[in-house]
Amino acid sequence: MQKDYKQWALGLITGRVLFDAPLRHFTSMKVGGPADALLFPKNRDELKKAVRYARRKKIPVLILGNGTNLVVKDKGVRGWIINLTQGMKKVEMEGEVVEAEAGSSLQRLVQFSVQKGLTGLEPFSGIPGTVGGGVAMNAGAWGAELKDVLLSVTFMKEDGEITERARSKLRFSYRGLAIPSSWIILKGKFGLKKGKKKEIRERVKSYLEMRRRKQPLDYPSAGSVFKNPKEGPAGKWIEESGLKGFRIGQAMVSERHANFIINLGKAKAEEVIRLMEFVEKKVHEGKGISLEREVKVVGES
Ligand SMILES: Cc1cc2nc3c(=O)[nH]c(=O)nc-3n(C[C@H](O)[C@H](O)[C@H](O)COP(=O)(O)OP(=O)(O)OC[C@H]3O[C@@H](n4cnc5c(N)ncnc54)[C@H](O)[C@@H]3O)c2cc1C
Image (tube, rainbow, N blue to C red; front, side, top):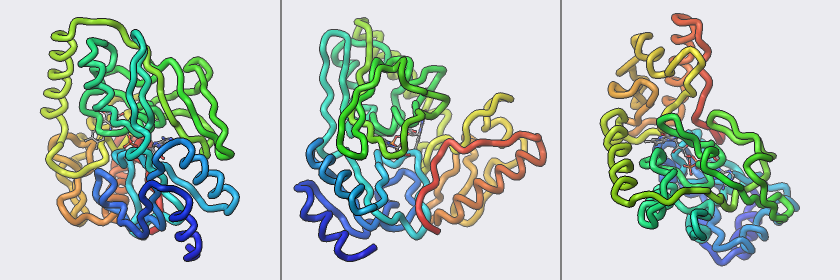
């Protein structure tokens, strides 16, 4: 990227700007090369300045949440990466409606609702992403999806205009939300119900316990690699294909949960991606099932 672009990013916002920051430090899989520039706008005005500027100068923009559903390639990402976790993370409530900004963590939102005695978000306990990433991915667990509790989502378009859309006007799917690629999620409004604090807390505890039992949380990963196909859980097909424990370099199909690829320490993105491709091929050959990726692969190799 031209040097100038970097300087311009600096002068544009008062929030932090990092250059050539290795994205493995900003993703849960712990792989990936540098971002040309990583911007942390402090508020909507700064975000607006950045996206309008990027649009004018044709700088590619990628929004990064907690990086828990991403595999960043080894040569990193060109252009600007924008992260909302430092300035845009307010969580507020009015009656039984909770509003959370995109940069807030989903776990903070869950904890907030527990403290306020509001029920509805318990199944999302332990999902490590942000509210923005959760809405973009329509994150879900134990049969629940975020769209079930969303009332509306507020977006910023590439010209900086802000628009709020009711859930009924949004096209959510299994682990996805169809919006123009330039739209940025700013905030979600969640419709919850009053409940008994003790019972809500107990449910959160039991969901976290189930997660700890089933998932390899002691290694870096990006969560489930593949979507569950209509034929049944992806993990079952991967396990039946004999792939649990299969390794390419430092990337390994988890022994505990076959739909997780874990980083044994120093994996390269290239190893993770080759392993994903190998799993896809084996499951297709052996079971006739085409696995679709849930994780997003970004950047240059
Ligand atoms: C151990 C582990 C367990 C997991 N368990 C689950 C689970 O049970 N269920 C589940 O659904 N997922 C799970 N995940 C995956 C992941 O946590 C979710 O997909 C989460 O919602 C991603 O949020 P994020 O902030 O990390 O998004 P990122 O990974 O940073 O980004 C994901 C996508 O969302 C886009 N995005 C992020 N923020 C915005 C925004 N503000 N506006 C527009 N686009 C945006 C990004 O550009 C990218 O395309 C798990 C991951 C791990 C590591």
